[in-house]
Length: 311
Image 1: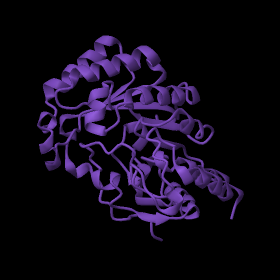
Image 2: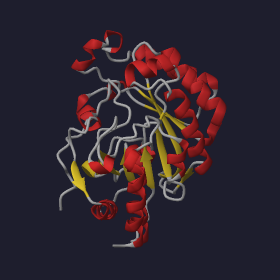
Image 3: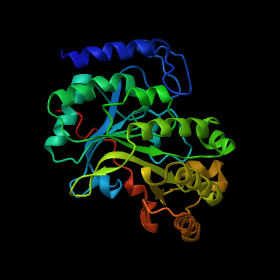
């Protein structure tokens, strides 16, 4: 076992009374107990493969090496990856096997290693990340996260994380509580993003226009919430200007389970999305990615079939 893997044991000690995310569940994940994230101290991955549906500077032509982790600290009612977020899919992997997966994705031509919803595993992921670096990983690590993290958790990634692909879901605490059970989301999202930008203060691209270092902040426009989205764009642009890229997303997909939330149980209209784009342009935003109207499709949700996990 390498020195990097030994560090994993230290990370696991924190899970005796887990408080690594803002939920502070204090369950003993090392004994198999689970809090809001739904997983113990073991690492569960549902898919590890080349992924072509991220922002152009992340996926490129070759694909992003996406590693989809089981569980989530938010449990948004509208989540596209609902089964995965509720830890209903995934295969247990060792830290050593995870390192192998990273290196295999690089061998397959991935532009980066894209850790999708890794938040609740971060203390035990850093060993695998460092071990992969020690064994020759050259491509960037992307932390594809929810925005609902503590500053301390993001600080642990300094020197390992190259790109933050961050979410900023809500600026309204009432809506954050209703749809994600996290009234403190706006405050936590602002704090964690500030630390991400401190670590990656300017975007850096290679000669193929692939992002090598920097921060992209995603916002998924929700039905009837254009004003909320405008407030988020205003905050992000006035706070960070061109230090970050925005990704304004038009892929909200109404699933059957949203019948309990009729006010959001529909697709976002072209008029709503265009209003948000016009607002961003008028504000002065130039560093932004946008989506075409056909993005709201269930077909964009991968199959959680264990691809790339089992040798």
